[in-house]
Image 1 (cartoon, rainbow, N blue to C red):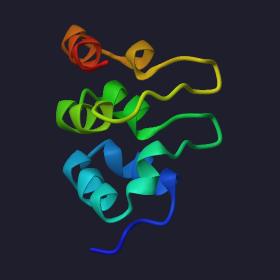
Image 2: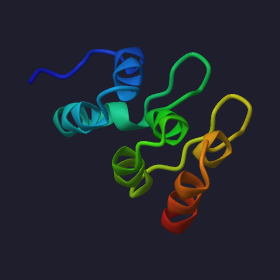
Image 3: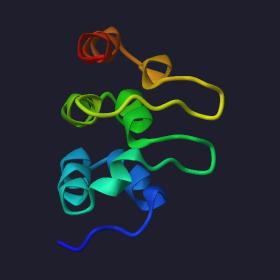
Image 4: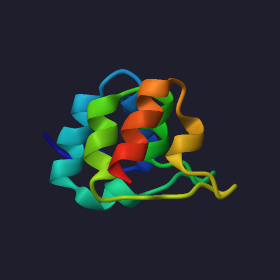
Length: 89
């Protein structure tokens, strides 16, 4: 599977296909730390969409802030996601 060229494409893919995002990251790990024009990363998306496997994968290595200085924990929509984030940081 060829890697997607942009963080924007992966952020869009994250909503419905987090496993595919992980697969793409394995072929192009530099995208794991990429941010869009607003500072959103895949970790922010994983927290927002409650994709725990993607969050766990990303939290192993990355702690990113968006343009407002907010971490993915700020975007957590459920207590379960917030708990996962807190346990890995």
